[in-house]
Image (cartoon, rainbow, N blue to C red; front, side):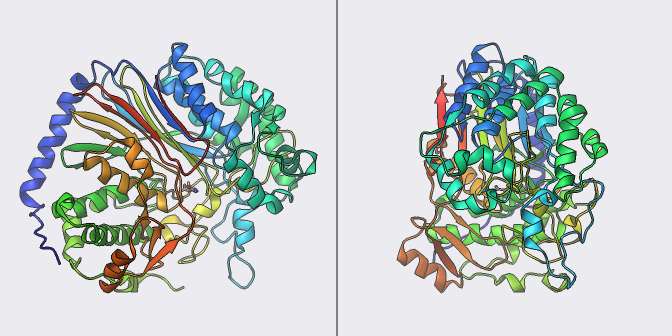
Length: 568
Ligand code: DON
């Protein structure tokens, strides 16, 4: 077993950390005065990446490009995100170093209730929680796009939405991932006539390359282009949505729609090896978990460790962060999330002290367990523009094609984000995640997310990273961040073999090429249960600007056929 000597991170390092944060505050504006001179966009679909560049070429900035990319994905990748869903956009403005997260997360309607998915015998009705209109929260993406255009972009919404409107009307060719997901979810889609008409034209799965046109969606987008958020949350579109949802058994109201607002959130900030990370705060759990895991890991000098030793410590950090996620995290507007404590280095030092260097900690043994009460899809894109403005955005309808439910005459599926709440204490959701009071259902509350759009900044490099993948988002971003810290670029982060631990189940899940048989044997000897999964996971897209070399690079995950990274 290799020798590991964690350097003492508390006391002294708190001062260093405060100095670093002060230093960032002083140098950040100066740092970004001159941009990279070219732009990089990496997203899950080539038409979205191209649309982003089109808007940049027409005088837009990264924030306008984010509107274009988001809205094109909302047309061509409804498996994963759309205007029936929500998203989180983390922004960095080059001119003054200002950073913010735009929270366009879905919201529970007023009539939601903490027991709304329970059967008479107290069990959870999983079908209601994930399929059909009752699974859908009030969508936030349109409000997010309007906010981006109004407050940060240079172009009106009507300009940045042009590519999406054009593609909805003229159509897009069916690609491998879309085709595969249609086959996988065909039966659920068939339950809803409007979704069937949109995605199974002629009543059957279209062939690869067949063109899917969504004229109803083009009309909805045109109304948003003309009227902004009001064109969606009030008036005819809102009425159509509310009527359609209620007719099929849902509980939305016109007041829920009109009352939806975007929230500007202060990002979670943490430092690691001289970089500042700017990442997603509640209602996402991602940023807090990333900060917590990096704090646990930093003193271990991971770069000097062998692969198995490193993976063991990384897994132990994952386990602890996911335990805290289950216990403490939810929408901070509704629940007192102990954020400061969770991202504090002293707290991490306490957690680190419980990690053995050569032995897995069974999840059941972690303190807190005794206090527990009884009992793919989504999308990410990363942008840096010629001036150095950056966007890391993760958008979602939750599981593949969301709730599958489509209101007739709209052309877009509604999310099933209500399943990101804890429907019952300790009961696993679609990603096996459990939660308690912090994440129970309440009217107007936002369900806890794992989405982790993240920026990494130093004097030398600026980067944006993120991915879909449910609970695995957090651990994929962690592995990507650690790879970045090892000196590698986006092409490497997006193609890394992945492993994941989420506290419960007490299992390390690994992609096929993550570990050799010998490495698995070593981890098993340490007490880990390793389960190799046939199917890969994630769809990561990252960009990076190396200020020293002037190089701008981008990477798109090869696990999906449609993604594209373009530097121009
Ligand atoms: O917000 C969340 O955490 C989930 N709705 C994300 C779902 C997801 O990434 C599915 N992707 N494979």
